Length: 463
Image 1 (cartoon, rainbow, N blue to C red):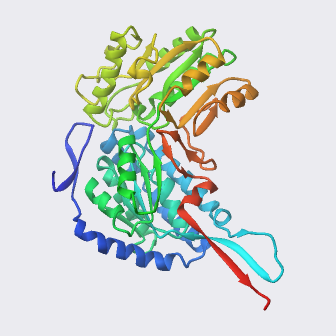
Image 2 (image 1 turned 120 degrees about the vertical axis):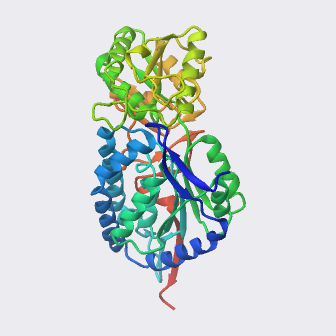
Image 3 (image 1 turned 180 degrees about the horizontal axis):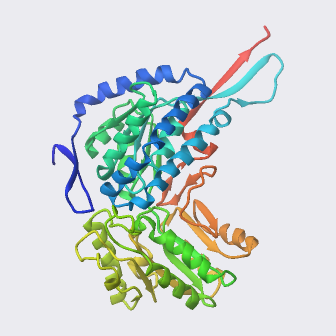
């Protein structure tokens, strides 16, 4: 294994960033700094923490132009969309700061003569966040800001592909006045991360990544008696009912499938369309997809950047080839996207029809700019197909009938259910998944529960 972290940009394959890995010998001092800082931080009021963290967010937001360019180089996000990542970070951080007072307030219990009783929400101690590359700020913020607001210290390990994002965030927070040692960044191998979890000094692990990665985190945490929050994969479905405008649904679902080159855990990867609007919907999808511009993410005209690397792009190419070989049809001509090149991260978007669940493209997470579309004849058929997955992160229905939307949603095994929307996190709602999409919850007032522990106070006031 290399002795340094290396980030190779998908823009041109060159080495973009290199940092020496930390030694496992540094773990004790890392934890000592975190514990010392947290011991003082937890004594601050929620309002005092909110004031400091609000400044942290403001300093971070002031760097959005720098961040947009760094994102393009690190993971291929077109610069025209970089500000959206910053905006999402700010929205989530600001909301979680705003509800902290309510979420962290003591739980009152019924009055009992001669006694004062209540339950405090106590900080856990040290939270270890392991963040992914695909939305490097918007995923990291889900645990980092609430953890700090709850009175914890945070240690961040960012993905190799986007380690610089961790540096940018941590530097902004320190510049804004966050106490030294309270938010630390590690340059860590997987083995280092496992040793840190097993050190006895970490009190919670917040992980976003693959299913195998989540299993590795659970293995590392075995016997530590600590909480683990896992946001893992997705194969998120959408159902287009016969009562919706198919053009409206097509335009929105293409965005949900193709944004960030399809590299979103909650991106749309399979669509079930009622036979009455199937043809019009598919026509709208093809038209919308053909309007994308695949190219260098540093160009303002680019609306679809490269996949994170050639391996990821080739994986999607393989899914499409297998589906076509099994009788499916690919509707997008790659020749319309000159930047597309076999064996490179630049991958033309693709729409595949005449598919079924015997094909990998409808069951296996793609994480690329591709979507399969399947015709259905009823709500019941759509429900069965939507639930036929090892994942359950989000799902959506496209309809003008709100009552039907709720009824169908009650039958779908998913963490979030949308009507006429997709691929979005509302910070006021719990972000959670079922099945292989993980366990635990971030965002909303509920998200604070896993970052604190209950501590009961039972005071006899009359003796």
